[in-house]
Length: 265
Image 1 (tube, rainbow, N blue to C red):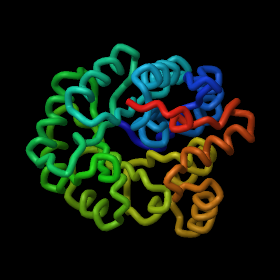
Image 2: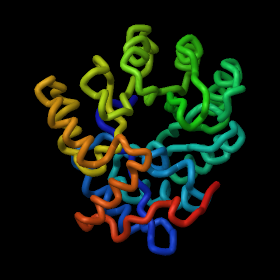
Image 3: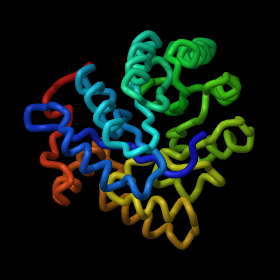
């Protein structure tokens, strides 16, 4: 269903902590000609910290300014019921799909993870992309479970942010039957034949990301590494570094982060 480069967007804010729609419009316009989809409100968008109001405003603004690009609404909340609540809102707002992790917590079992995605597809009315990570959820979806999830009609892709070349290569070799997207910039040239990139780097270097996906030549490794270093993509608060750069360019009017205001879901 999806292929190519997806920009995992930062969330532009005003000085008062509201979503800055004019900044969203400029940000989308700056990447739109080079990417294939837009992803608001996932980790680069501080999705884990957005209030309900901020989350809804960011998804709505992205849809309004997408110019025909698919909008994949990121959802980072801890339980299946809360994910479903936001997924239903995403559908109302005009999103094409949602991207969601497993429920949070180390005690979440593999069957519970499977049932989570099964319910999300059945009850949201939207296509679902699995966000394969462990830093936020605090758990790991096993390969066998992930392959079961991919057989559920309505699961349309996997955003792999496992940060493991071995894991994504095993996933690709297992032929999950849905597109696999690399979500870690440092690994874009090491992962093998992925179906696309879902990356924060596309906020600031969308044309480079498009060129790299079209021609993932090893000779581009130094340039990729330089971009990762320049924009602080290995930092725990990489989204802050991106906002600083986007403000310097005049795309954003502030470099405020959600954490600056202390607002949490």
